[in-house]
Length: 150
Image 1 (cartoon, rainbow, N blue to C red):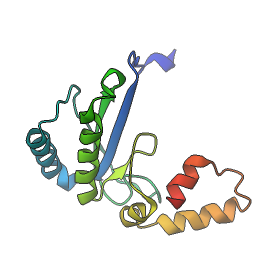
Image 2 (cartoon, rainbow, N blue to C red; image 1 turned 90 degrees about the vertical axis):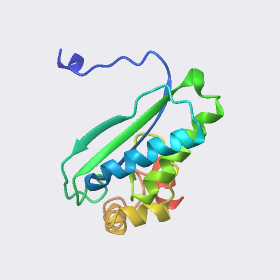
Image 3 (cartoon, rainbow, N blue to C red; image 1 turned 135 degrees about the horizontal axis):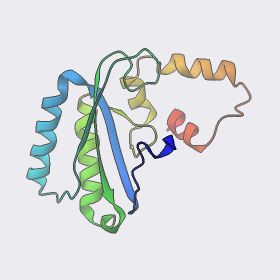
Image 4 (cartoon, rainbow, N blue to C red; image 1 turned 180 degrees about the vertical axis):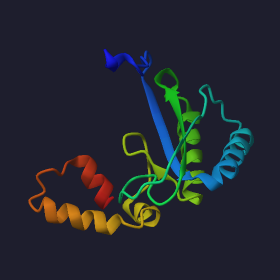
């Protein structure tokens, strides 16, 4: 029954954005996010989630090279049509891009390949490995194409 250990039911559909960045920038990022929310008068109905992860050495890991702080937030779909939704997520994207934020690959992100190359020093190394191990592109799908060629 271990599948219930960390089970959190999601009763409302939601859209989520989450970024990892160097832990040393934690307070600067939070101050800027809070300031911009207030300046833009954005109505936020969910908390900003925070977690910390030790560094690792995997090529496309958001924690590659340094200890990271992750921040994430979500919007529930009944509010999806509100203009604040895109404004809020864009605000998060813009702030985190200034701090070389690395998005969670399983959540919303708007950055392009050129931006990934800036925040992942081993980006090209990773794709060289992919080309070597999957030369016929059997494992390629729309998400991989978007990630690699956007």
